[in-house]
Figure 1 (cartoon, rainbow, N blue to C red):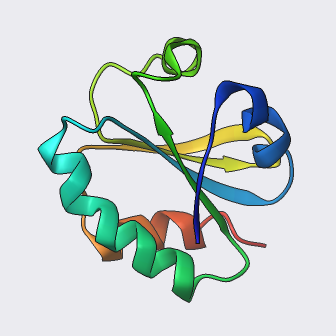
Figure 2 (cartoon, helix red, strand yellow):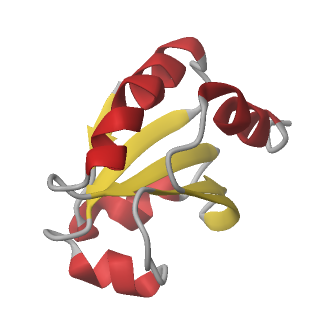
Figure 3 (tube, one colour):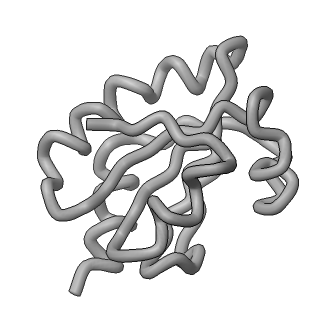
Length: 103
């Protein structure tokens, strides 16, 4: 399951474990292209939390993490950004980066 996050709920959601956050926008075609991949990974990787943040509705978060291009995927571990993928990456690249952060 991919959670839709807002600025208000963001810090609480990412504070524990490994969390992939997809920074996206409704008008972004590559963002829509990778959405099924993110959904698949969320079903396959049960120990990882998945979320997405609409940068147009949550400009503060986009600014905080210096989002300049979308899609941008940031993988957090215990609340800290640990890895970033910019652009429409494939499933294997995303899953490898996540697996590198799992204990």
